[in-house]
Length: 91
Image (tube, rainbow, N blue to C red; front, top):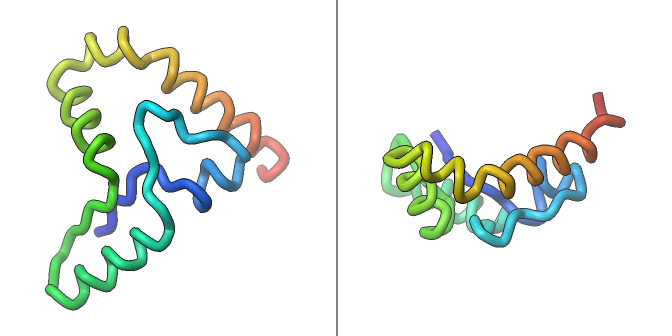
């Protein structure tokens, strides 16, 4: 299983034209490819490619969901709206 996190230059952000929120940062397609190759070479069933900042934020959100919602709810909602708006012609 590959957990890439937010990826700049590919995927939903690139396809929609939405910017990755600066708060979370982004990985690259090349990092995903390198992580998959490493996982295969080391016989790993799971690989997480998300930058450390993203992983820390996910852990914080899981442990303090109400606080996370207050702190980042607007940023997350804005990103979701941008992605949805950029995808409407593709449905």
